Amino acid sequence: MIGALEIELHLPAVRSLKEKRAVLRPIIESSRSRYRVAIAETGYQDLHQRAVIEVAAVASAGRVVTEELDAVERLVWSSPGVEVIASRRWWSEEE
Image 1 (cartoon, rainbow, N blue to C red):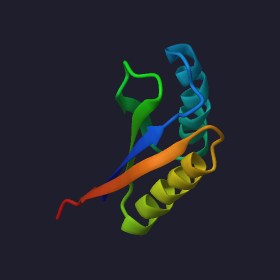
Image 2 (image 1 turned 180 degrees about the vertical axis):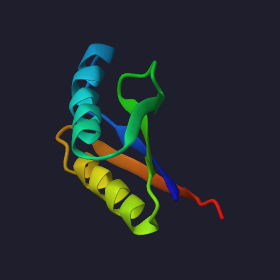
Image 3 (image 1 turned 180 degrees about the horizontal axis):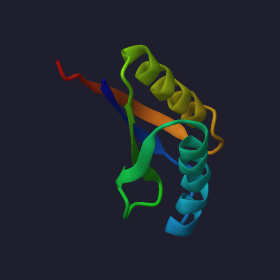
Image 4 (image 1 turned 90 degrees about the horizontal axis):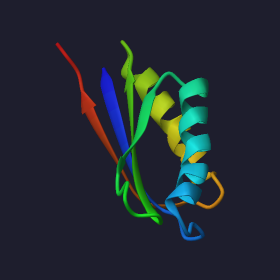
């Protein structure tokens, strides 16, 4: 089972791309170290108050993928200075 999560963010207090990186870096690094996921900033890289991060998880059981994506989503929602605009998930499974 493969699961993907896309989270669109608003960073209202950020005034520069450097500040944006300072807000996103802990989210990305924490997700990588705590959970078995791949994560990257994929959208609005040239805008300082907007961001899109995408997360991917792979496991033999769908329940495990769901738990990993849920944990990352909770981490993002609880991060200071970040407002979630939208969150979307995709699933793919090989038979």
